[in-house]
Structure formats: structure tokens, C-alpha cells
Length: 140
Image (cartoon, rainbow, N blue to C red):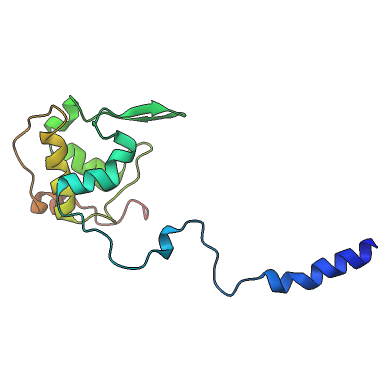
């Protein structure tokens, strides 16, 4: 009986195989254009706030810590958030291969002028380009 069951399962395996690769998420099945991320607020809401929270106060839990932007003295230098966004830091992934220079400049300017921050020296896409790594952090 076991032999018959085993042979039946073995014979059914080719029927279970798919002709296309399995996907772990449904996002790859989305057809059409994705909303453009033109403003710093757009980038923040769609990329950053999931970890740093809508109010910019960060979060702690499940063994992870996401720093706050609200009242963060490290934002005084615009070069610091640009570096972190482009290269990653700690548990934060790098976004130099995902976000364009203007998107990075826009989101840095956004977090430096919101959440109780008042740093008015805006960074430009050219400033971001000057900090872009020659190779992606993944290749290093």
C-alpha cells in the first residue's frame, strides 16, 4: 500500500510544477504605472514612514530601533541623512540604487523642515550626486 501511495505521489509531482517562477509577494503582479514620488513628502510617505512613523518620532520594538527625525540633531548637517539614505546604516537598507538624486534631495529637505525641525539650508540634486557612491553598497 505504501509503495502504491509513494508511486502515486511521485507520478503527480510533474503536475504540481509550474511553468513560471513562484513569487513570494503579490507586488510583482501589479500592472500599470506606480505613483510617481515627486515630492519629499511623497517619498517619505511611501518609503520612510513605515519604519520612522508618520509623525517622524521613530519606533522601537521586535529587536529593532528606528531613529526619530523629530528633534534629531544629526539632521543639522544635510550630508548625514544623504549618506545614510544612499549607503544604509545599521538595519536601514541603502537606497542609492532605488531613489534618484532629486528624490533623495527632496526627502532630505522634507525631514529637515518637518517634525519640528527648522533647517532651511536646502540640499540640491547636484549635492546628492556629489555624494553618490562609485559602486553600490551591495557591491562593496
